[in-house]
Amino acid sequence: MKKLSLDKILQSQGFGSRKGCRDLIEEGEVSIDGVVIQKWKTEYQPEGLVFQVFDETWEYREKVYLVLNKPSGYECSRKPTHHPAVLTLFPQNMEWRDVQPVGRLDHDTTGLLLLSDDGAFIHAQSSPKRHQPKTYIATTAEPVTDALVAQLLSGVQLIDEPAPIAALVANKVSENEIEIVLEQGKYHQVKRMLAAAGNHCSALRRVKIGGLLLADLDLAEGEWRFLNADELALLQS
Image (cartoon, rainbow, N blue to C red):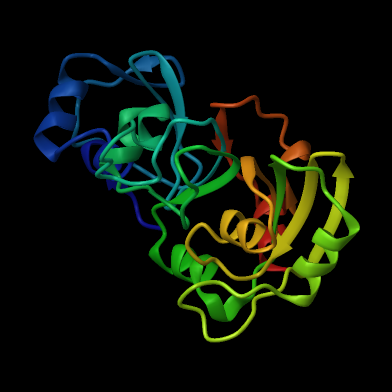
């Protein structure tokens, strides 16, 4: 990777327009290795570069791959209609660099949500051809019965679907909780499947995507972080 001027590096990381980034540098708000840099034309090797903006430390990333433990009450949309967007849980530079949710969770659904500014990654993860399994824990209004589990495994008919849709896995977790694994990503699918099977979903949490398990990420609701290479590999398997 060739060297880039500091203003170009900051712009690529979502810190504003070229002019805005130049202003940040000239105003002394950017430092590298504890040294304030005020010349925006200074060039650096971006790969692996660690810098500070407003005393907050960042590492240069050509593309970002993020994971959020989504709380209830947030929409997975850049143009929300009734609730705040999940991007309001992130620093503003993530929105400026066009980070987007990978697929969607309903505003009242919690748990594992991926976000990225890598269009190829978003497409690959969202494509129905990928058959990426996703695991949910649903809280039900009525007790989970053996008959309910059997129905979900054999397939239930949803409105506007040509054929019954079955869960890959359905396991009773407790009297009113059930684990459901799906490889499709249809609108309100878990809720609609439970309704078609004669029950009702009162709460829903996504706990796993591919091999990436929310419990292993040590994130409280509303917290986020960058995915590392090993974690990204779990999404490719």
